[in-house]
Amino acid sequence: MVASRVVRVLAPNPSPMTLEGTNTYVVLGGREAIVIDPGPTDDAHIDAIVASAAARGASISAIAVTHGHPDHAPGAAPLHARTGAPVYAHKVARFPFDVASGDGDRVVAGDAVLEVIDAPGHARDHLVFSLPEERALFTGDVVIGRGTVVIAPPNGDMRAYQATLARLLREHGDDKTIYGGHGPAIEAPRAKLEEYIAHRELREREIVTALGTGQRTIPELVSAIYRSVSTFLWPAAARQVLAYLIALEREGRVQTRMLSRPMTDEEAAILDPDLARLADSESAAVARAELGFDDREAGIAAYALL
Image (cartoon, rainbow, N blue to C red; front, side, top):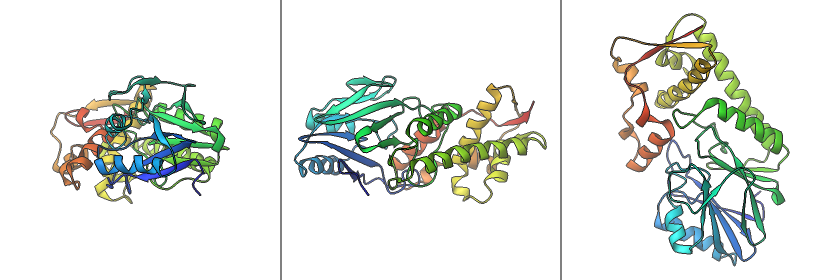
């Protein structure tokens, strides 16, 4: 059930990375409203956001962005131009914003108050917003309504993400609702956060177990660990495996060795995929940002336990 203050406006950008599309939320505060994650630049979507607030007797007086990925942040600029509402974002965000927000800050519109939580891991500039009155969390891409999220270097950090999940469980496990950036609302936050934490721990154990039999490349790890997952998703899985390996290497548990050979066609399909296979250029841009393919290493490496 959608809380009385919260209205979802679904952006028209469905894709393999965004599920049915980006969830934009209008949080009502009487005659004023806060918009969370205006989504992509799309005139019809901006119209729908403004109309949703107006239909409930509210004008938009604040825009809060969870993070800078292209399915969440670009709509902030045209919505700001349309309404004059200031844009609140993380201090390291690389898109235009008006107010730098960090842990413990607030976003206020009328009698609606969002509390800001610094939530790195999926992205360095990720914020989560809490609406204490409704015991609700707006989690962007930290937690989504269906499935799990991508943690991909260099913008994603597995240990930072795990710490964020642990903090949300500790401080907000008893909340009533999680409104994720994609998919349906989550009515059992504690169970979902525990599920996410357990999933990350399981994947790491699987990687360590696979490396226990000898050095492996990322494509070898992906084909072993994600064999029941569609090969279409293996490039995303490869970026997640890399995030674990980076964490393990920093902790002195894994070492990396670059191989003196080119990638095979099969390896390249996983490590250097053709994103043009996605439905459109916008979907490809989201995938590129989410998966960090603009910053991938050349060549192929093998990993081994120390």
